[in-house]
Image (cartoon, rainbow, N blue to C red; front, side):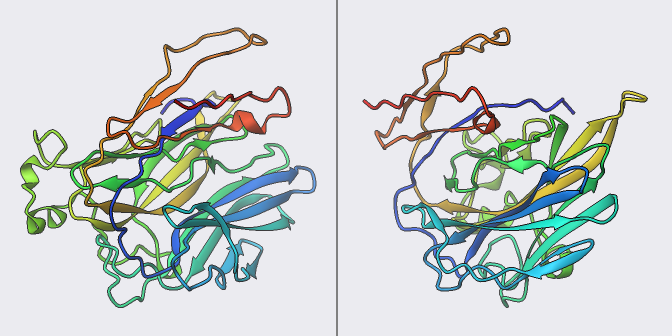
Length: 338
């Protein structure tokens, strides 16, 4: 477990060609973030962040956001913010300010009906499993803590038999250490969804004519699906059957105990998300960023980033960093094309 650093995540967005996979519900992904407003009054802002499918007629909302000392029904969101016209993805954010009356561990959950029908690695053919996310954190006047936050939207799509990667870009505003793991998505009343299997199970390869024992991208071995416990990078080498898969990423927060200099568990946040795999032949873009930089505090950092695509598809370079939340100085970006 390494100490979390504030990192800049750069992702070339790969647009997959061809018809999209039909989705039967509205929620694609979701997570809960907790931000400290006032430490002495123990006032926090709870944000429920949900990514939805714009092709669905079902509006997000109607579930109950629960926390240890209260709850509220989340209203319907008729017009969430569209973040990708091409991929039909919108984002809805519901916020609730809460003042806690006592210190201690707080569990925050949100549950909404009808997880996506047709998710390949979850048994929900009867549309009877709910969408559920949770976050746990410590309320303390001495620690003044906020939960980890996911900076990178879960909008990546993948191609059959091509390596798929996703980094949630988790960051901690208090500079605490973070670790990552893949967990089983949750459903009704916070229990594990029924009959979950990892996306690299043989049932998603052999029936569609893919040799499971040689199903990674370079055909040298079986497919793998794992997360780097220190960086949070999810790597699937490589997807099998086209369709929708469901996964959950848990990021755990660790605080240094000043008394004995050991890391103590402080809380966690979970991102539940879908991965859309299509039958496409695109190759991933490349990003050239130069060598690593080491500078002293107060020095100006300047670097050039170059993105290209071997299939000559459009490439978008996006920067995700909590540096943009700093009061001063702000980074300066000069986009260019060609």
